[in-house]
Image (cartoon, rainbow, N blue to C red; front, side, top):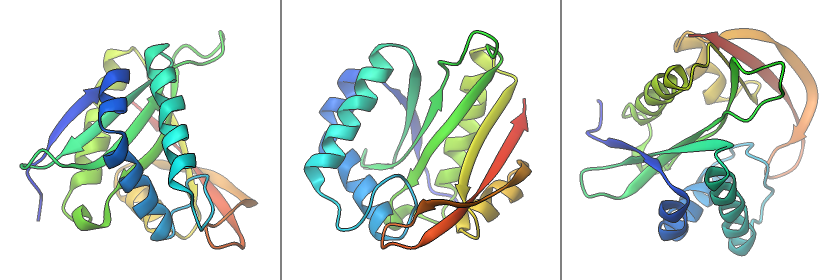
Amino acid sequence: MATSITIRTFSSADILHHLDALTDILENCIRCGASVSFMLPCEPNNLRAWWRTVAQSVEAKERFLLAALNTDQQLVGTVQLIVSQPENQPHRADVAKLLVHERARRRGVAAQLMAALETLASEQHKTLLVLDTATGSGAETFYQQSGWHKAGVIPDYALMPEGGLTSTTVFYKRL
């Protein structure tokens, strides 16, 4: 069942205004086992500091943050498009941190965020998107079902939030 949501591109000021909600989504995803750069137990102040860094990157026009808001205007998910790339890769962008709060999962939020991200990438003249995700995760299945192509697997790439190494699967999508 698809949830009625609105996708907005957040400015740096929007990120700072919604800092607590963004921190809650990130913390929730980590607690649910998402391999998104942080370990358990996670310190909320560290997560807020990370979001402030994202806000600086948005301000510098290095990335975009797309936010999903439900009908009550509650933030339920985010995804990032990193457009700042080396000089020889102006056609490419990285996708990072697709985060959906557990209360909004399995309702089409991730699909709507990714569709909006692909539209935004095309508007930015990007023709190739790249991402990686923990091998064997629900996210890996989601990307495969969403038309992304598996490029390969890197073993022992990162630690899962509770410890233990996981491989990462690298995906790409041509627009």
